[in-house]
Length: 267
Ligand code: NAI
Image 1 (tube, rainbow, N blue to C red):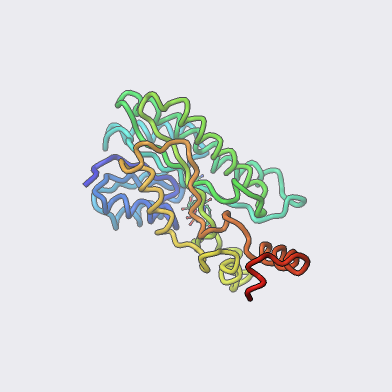
Image 2 (tube, protein in one colour; image 1 turned 60 degrees about the horizontal axis):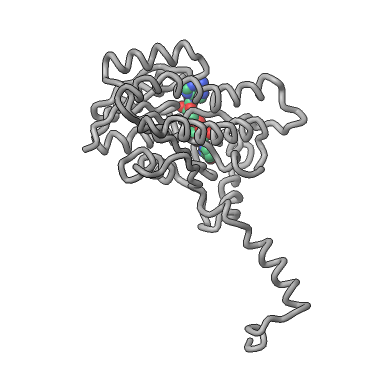
């Protein structure tokens, strides 16, 4: 039993809902928050010792009020999981200004608001853990320019908080998931029902991810097993960022045709 007070944002759906469920299964008191109040209530109702609260992370005022309410009604936040995120699926040249700002407002400004709100309580308690759900998009170019910039900013913020508050016992890490089949993909799955199968071909492990894969990594980084890990961004990506076999094969096979290595003579 871990019995921590865990605040998860965007926990009414997808990855956040599974993070909340895995934390509750460990014995934590999970505050399931989401801008979608009904979704937060639905997920929380399935979990022991959990409460639902409506929270739009883009509003600093709302975030401060919810964090204060959690401190009063549940206890000071010991683990913060910044999971809320939205992804605009419009190419850069046609991206309206409001969608650029929206992606950054949810993923990056949202984390600024929540981290700022929980830090005083964590400092007073002598420590705490923050895990940010970034993306492989924050580490390499894969489209979704606004979303990617927001996630890259979130990775930078992760390091800043880790370094600045390490001496207060606060750890701050991130995960960078690859493609995970959740409602965030709904629009693209409706436009192309095969999109997940086509995405899977790019993954060395041969499949897209599950919310459980990400949640397990988040809870590891939030837990005592990671007590000497801070400032890192852990890819949870089936090997996507490790490299491209198709490219390696193409380059190596053409090089071999010019200059065979010693091992090739035995073939
Ligand atoms: P999802 O769409 O299933 O869940 C996102 C949740 O965030 C929803 O419940 C939504 O209501 C909530 N949300 C949206 N705006 C909010 C706001 N302003 N304040 C509070 N909550 C808000 O998506 P999914 O896939 O579970 O995404 C969770 C996180 O994982 C996001 O940060 C996303 O960027 C990240 N991620 C997802 C990947 C994927 O392929 N599904 C890949 C890499 C990262």
